[in-house]
Length: 82
Image 1 (cartoon, one colour):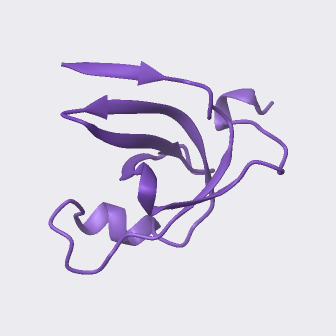
Image 2: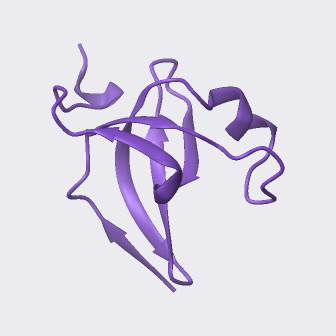
């Protein structure tokens, strides 16, 4: 069972995937350090995963705790761009 949460939608996020963490694969590590925006947060089995969208329209999931958030930046996702 999972629950969707959207209060962080559009918040600027930079993932910091931990090397060797079995939660992350090659795609997670490829996007680590790049800036994207949160589309939503999903809770699965008590873990909060953020769905992060990047400018190339790629969506990658990260543990919410592994994101550096910048709530002061202009909010938006690639869906909001012209």
